[in-house]
Length: 425
Length: 101
Image (cartoon, rainbow over all chains, first blue to last red):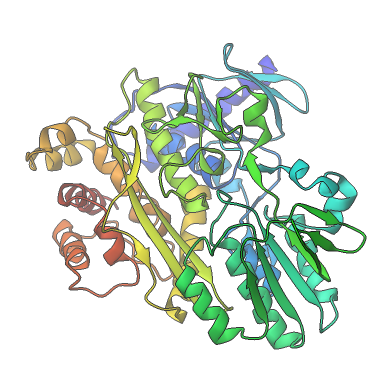
């Protein structure tokens, strides 16, 4: 392990030379040290790049990610609907390695010792850090839906709420479903990852049915009492575009499933589908609880909003969907990218012996497709509030689309290309 | 680069000016909140249909932002986002992007 590290520092040292020529105009950063980033999604990949970029190569960064490539959750509903492919939502980690000198390790962190500032890896060995960034995303609470709490059931009743093999598998189930079949999508109680995502998925599956299997139906079983995001825009799309195809049922929490009969079991009712897509309730990625981090409601990590540092665990910063969100702040990839920049700036200050900026700002933009061409958005800006010590949404700012439109459908793809480059290129 | 943003911040000395000027990275940090859509340091992906901001003169960006904020310039989302930042913050952001290549 020591040998590997020494070799790595040499390699990173060489990359730092490249960095100086890339950013020759900037003055020398004071920060140095080793930051380990766990999780190469919207949060972690952004942090890895920005720490290298803003430290002008002065800080060594190791990114630990279990998957060989980045696969985006945003846009993945278009793969499920059939208008995009997995290739369209997959981006390599080569840019982080080659352009930014990030050491990318394909492995999984199994333990964090925050007192000793070390992590242990699944493939063996350990690594020390000066600051640790955990961007673990979410893990599912399968125990809340007892019959789903085993691998066989999970292979049949999919969530497809992490983009990857489940995205492909759900698409295949929809393709194999006979015309006249029923696709049911179960949404957990908020907070969950990507508030408008399930409603977008329902639209895109309905669009696929409308064009290819017109006798088929989409039924949304929502555990919440109402549509959680962009309500007016979604309900208008449903009545304008998918009347007779898409049905919305609020207050319909799925408590269990009958796997053999692809049936959702609700409190007082059952619902049989041909394709049953259950998004279970989720919580911070398992490594958060395993690391002994302070969780709120036993689910989400409590962070200091000036640095994203975990309350009670110095040296560990958590980003993205895993955190207990500030008021009205969504769990989104865009927001995870913003958390990463806030944390990167704070970490560089802290590694230089300075306090984090006292006035951080983050903002969110989220597009949802209502068919393969038209999209709608929601946006918000959140400024740090010293009185409440959290991020507060700016009143009078933010909002949603006036109406669904094709221009936003084009901008949504532009958003994806730009944010993927902002993270990975 | 840092010196320019510090000067921009110093030039603003208003009610919040002293606090803002104390942080030489504030302009950089604020501008990074735009990068998701407009590209790292304002270098948007070419052909993706979103404006690059790197190297755009500060006055031009500031005027656009002011028009978004007042509602004079129609937009899909920028009229909603611009309202979330103070005029001092927008000034720092525009100054930062103007200094980028």
